[in-house]
Amino acid sequence: MTRPYILHMFTPGKQPSPFDVNMAADAGYDMIVPYCDVGRDNVGALTQDAIFSRGPKGAAHTGIFIGGQDVVLAADMLELARHAMVPPFEVSVFADPSGAYTTAAALVAAVERQLRRAHQTDFEGRRVLVVGGSGSVGRIAGALASQLGAQVWLSTRSDAQHAAKVAEDTNRHFDAQTEGVVIRNGKDLQKMLADTDVVFATARAGVQVVSETERTAARKLLVAADVNAVPPAGIAGVEVMDDGKRVAGSDAVGVGALAIGNVKYQVQHRLFKQMRDAARPVYLGTVEAMALAREVVAEQG
Image 1 (cartoon, rainbow, N blue to C red):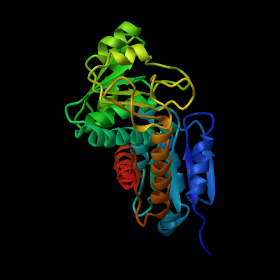
Image 2: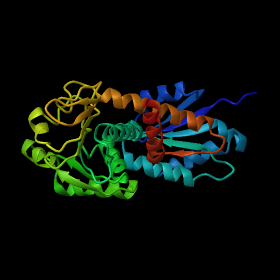
Image 3: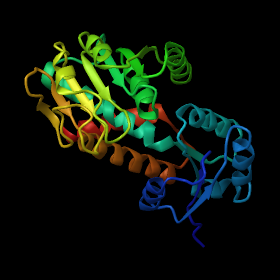
């Protein structure tokens, strides 16, 4: 009898994301089982409960997905699950809280392509401002850009202490060098944009965080990228379908939410498939998401 492919979905919240359930089903998992209120204290025990019952051969037909909303917690849970394995009883684990790892990877890879295509450069030495930098996608996108050599500012509307903590936690967990900054008004934003080469808009959907007036202050801007697909545009002048379209009145090009989303969808689907089809256990997080996003973007040309 062919063993069914079982995916155990661990989330710290009250329910898993329907988006993730759909993606897992489309990747070929036969049974998808949610577990709520999973955190650092019990992820190891649940992992060991999942690995022993099917034997070493059944491990190849078993996977664990870590969701939720907290990108730092998910990273910790991924490592705790890895350390809970007892070889040869070992299964694959994939973490993607709120889709932040795959969305951020898609954002950074799509912008990297436009830096090269439109400006014959890359992230090395570039100044990147992440508007909404204390959020899940913003923190990971900032970390990934930092790993590629950029100077990254993670912005928040809170206070300096909170901004510093966000950057410190992000740097420690994701091998990055980012700086937290406070932006409370248009004047603060224009001052930061004046020295910015790349801007990521990663704030909540349906909110414009960079107006046309503020954007025009970014005279050095090369690429403006927006993950917001809900009107109004997060960055004035960047539409959801843009993928290298020149932003009016500047030398910058725009990358819109659907262009990023197309890459994100493929990355998450392929990571689920990679976990399902792996002959040996794999552990998938931000590093693997970024590598695969670059592959997807390269295929697009």
